[in-house]
Amino acid sequence: MKKIVIGFSIAIVSVIAISASSMSDSSSQKESVTDPESLVGDYNVYSLAMPEELSFAGEKVPLSDPDIEERFDNELLSNVYFQSNAIKLIKKAHKYFPIIEPILREEGIPDDFKYLAVAESALTNAVSPAGAKGFWQLMPATARELNMEVNDNVDERYNMEMSTRAACKYLKDSKKKFGTWTLAAAAYNAGNRGVNRQQERQEEGEYYDLLLNSETARYVFRILALKEILEKPEAYGFNVLPEHFYKNVPVSQVEVDYEIDDLVAFAKANKISYKVLKIHNPWLRETMLNNKSGKTYFISIPKAGYYK
Image (cartoon, rainbow, N blue to C red):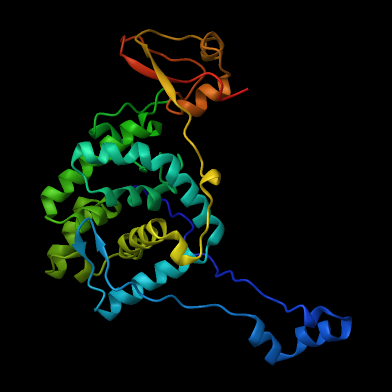
């Protein structure tokens, strides 16, 4: 649906532990650095055990297939050992999942699809070189087909609630077409036509049996790896204190069915800065709101006391 690749395939980082005794004097320190046996003893990077079982949206992953096991292992290693990114995702998940989860539930979409948003955008309003935008990386044409407003003044792909509901509609259509949520996830990346074309060409029906382009071939496994880490962070060595989680600022909604010539003045009238207005309403793309049609918009205004 977009073509943005979040940097989940980064070099493995590990911790080097140097014993206190080897630091006692400069000669012993020099020996510990140059002696191969000492280096091997002090520097350890570990492979990761495979989970006993995996599922996506209630659909079992065939880990007994050696190709499937290796592909999942590749994504798990890449994401576990990109530690700074994983910690940021853990912190962001506590901020944004409480917004995404109830929408998925209301729309009848399995909860596991929140990890698709993580794979798409790392829970940011990302912009891809191809023009996909927002948490769910919707392309302009697709967003318009899903009844979203996309123009230079208003881009509802940046509205997380609206884009989540639009993504749900796309996913439900894909599930209806393909029959499984796993294929619906793959189609979110490759498009319904792209997946269907390969099914017909290869005479195979299931995602795990299809030979797909490199990005789509990795896509579901990246989602599975992110799910594994975000559901069990401590099992993979990630310890983030609750007070370090990113937090949502509560907002109220101001209903607007008129033009706003100056959003700076609008922000000041609501006792916030223009910056804070844009933080909470990134779908407003300019310094004014053109609304000649009288459409009703809802502008988020944070509750008092959260910003200076």
